[in-house]
Length: 89
Image (tube, rainbow, N blue to C red; front, side):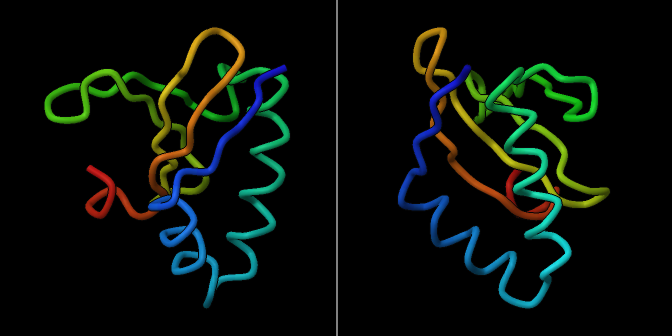
């Protein structure tokens, strides 16, 4: 099981993202449950990032919403950002 740490920038981005979208919040928490059990669960579509985000990963919450995170060892991950494709990449 992966232990999650919410980065300060992630907290701000999360509040902004779910403020006007309660459905997104429900989906997020459902997918966080999957992530904690298996960060590579097929539903998440977890993928490695490149370019300026090299070393980070992302998973899909819904069509145009991504969560960017970084693995810190094999059992810990830091959530870095959440938002639309254009916002986080």
